[in-house]
Length: 447
Image (cartoon, rainbow, N blue to C red; front, side, top):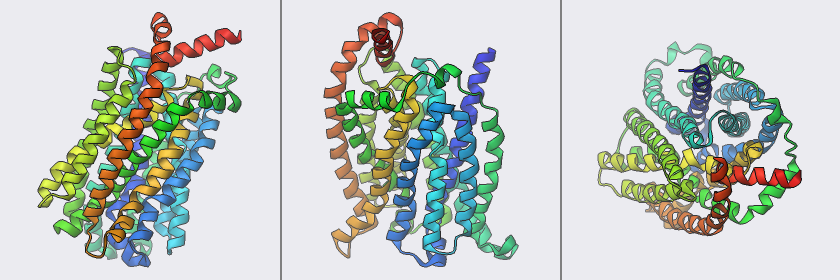
């Protein structure tokens, strides 16, 4: 392996590790519904605000300033600060004594983690050649599923073990608080990895890609961008809702306890997400090399349909084992959707806008999808009447999302395919992607 290849592998490993850690910290909450509700005294709707709106909105609002700083000064510095800050907020969440303090510290966690995704994707785009970038981003997406899976696999059994021996906990921690404190300590491991990442090239920081240039580019692609983001609001909303409420459905509808739920859900979350993310990156790269226009959306559109149908089948299953099989399919599809979402959007823009494009993507699907998804389930359950189950509400939401997302992706293809086709000859002649071909042409015109 060449030195360059080794350097690229280290960069991907470091970013993967940080992504995994961030998703452990944010996802651990989902297996701790019972003890947190009991100790703090909150209901399902309040808990859904911790899972969804408080995190998603703060994450999305903070992402754009962090992305601008990443484009301007390089992603390494932003990621170092991000890891340190969210680790402190994870500890603070575990120390919170009231619902308001849980909300505040959850917002702090989101602000810290908002610096990671735009910066890490920008670094991948600087490091890998164009036909390998979707695979590189899919490696980062693995961190979401490894982290989420580990939080369930380890969280359920660890909670049971600590609840069986509460006297062994230091500082008067209750079991769920000790788990958040442990996650905060692990954050220390990621800091040296972030510090070892390379600085951005000086040329990247001095491209003249001002905010004005970025918003001009956004305006040029406004039709396609609106359709893409609208579709992803629904897709990510369903992903958030499934992740937030399927563990509770296994407990409430199928009679599983937290340990069994955590181990089973964590396993399929990890396996399904990893396979989905890797497969999506490989398939998109293959379709791109074969000249398929808008390959990213072609793959994502199929994944949305699969996820929606699999969630419907899971909540309608007669027992937990069958539900788990369908849930695996839905998580495989969700892995593909998550892996390609930010990459597909920033792909519409030139490289100097990568981090800011990712941040715009995070604002819409992140804020709206993340806020709507978890809260839509208890709200729909209330509208369906007193006899409605959480599973029925999730199934209804899944059907709504499927129609919504497929409609918007269809409109996106009408906007984007003529644009991509018009740029393809220029790009192919230079060995570039269509967007890169447009960037070179634009710079030539400016000169």
